[in-house]
Length: 70
Image (cartoon, rainbow, N blue to C red):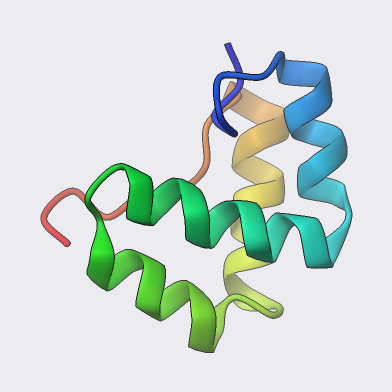
């Protein structure tokens, strides 16, 4: 399963490629998982840095970067 809302890996990769959808999905996914600090960080730093990291991780292993203790 992909990391965005339990969608397939291909759909999750497509969502991760598009910057705006990756930003919104990343915020919602992190907040849904109880990672509020990670969601807030995604709001402020998600435009480029976190987007590139999430995209690479989504392509390589099907998961986005999530803070363990955030």
